[in-house]
Length: 129
Image 1 (cartoon, helix red, strand yellow):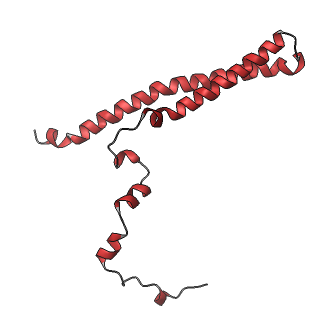
Image 2 (image 1 turned 60 degrees about the vertical axis):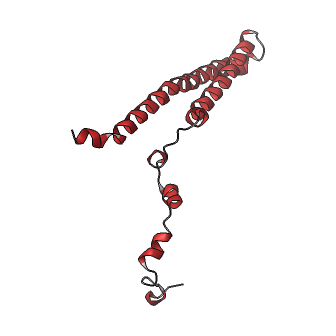
Image 3 (image 1 turned 120 degrees about the vertical axis):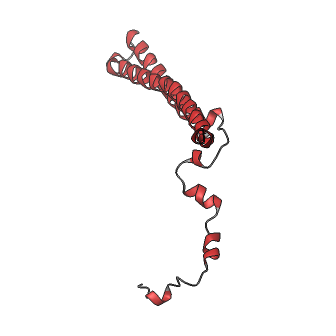
């Protein structure tokens, strides 16, 4: 199981051969931030997919809570819907509001990214004035 130090060939490859292993795709896959490497704009679904999913789940839980609350007011299954109806209603409403607030936050974040890209592209012009 143990490897001797002689078995590890550190000096066998030249610098150009080891540099070939580091390609642009490898660097891109290792980086954590896409915005540093890509300049193409993302589609609306790629930008807003998480808030849309959160709003959909929140709306579904809200409607389920409304149905359970309606069953309680109609005196159908009053014991089980006594707590569950308002509980699901309030949780669904909170999740829906979180999704609704998330959309303007994402828009503001996109605006800040575009402004920061503008200033980073023209930074050298301001430094030479």
